[in-house]
Image (cartoon, rainbow, N blue to C red; front, side, top):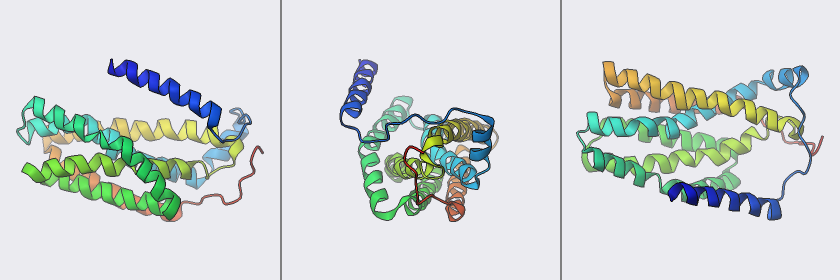
Amino acid sequence: MILVFIAVMAMFTAFVMILFGKFGNFPGDQPSASNVKLVFSRTSFWIMIALLAFGISGHVGIYTMIPLYLISEQGMDAELANTLVGLSQVSTFFMSFVGGWITDRLGEKHTIVLFLLITGFIMVSLGILSGIWLKIVLFLEPAAAVCFLPAAFAALSRIVQPNIRSLATSWAMPIAFIIGGGLFPTALGYMGEDYSFGLGISIMGILIMLGSSLVIFLKLLDQLEEGC
């Protein structure tokens, strides 16, 4: 029933967006050698992949491993761990709107830095705390991590002109997801097997905080040629 509800809401959202959405009504350019070169030659494209990878690892990547961490190292009952992890994700629906609101006021770059730093700090805390404090940061982590996404997608849309925006997005997201949602959980699994899940989570938190400095080199276009 939950899956049916999600499917219905997805279709309803698409229908509402078609009727009331305000966005460019023009086709994007098709993939070609020249377009590949144009997108891949932009340093900001690769910086956005790195930033998205950090953001995804702080949300999807950590989510896949948290139950195992809570059960194997924190000694939680499996039912309690799964319940806490599930409930902690509820805030992401509301916080995504908060992330968009903050992006409108601070701008893409400042918002990306802010929430990567917050997410990284919370992940460090998640790896070293226990008891009630662990449960608190467990709820704070996804709420902070999801606020990164509105700013990241807004920035991704401004690294190239609108006619190749769809190409940049379709190439950047899979690469970033493989890193943040695939390689990170794998590395964390090896850390948990050989050393400690908590140590791996804390190290990743530090890397996310350090990775936020890449925003300094990110160049966003101010003049967008709509429908070019």
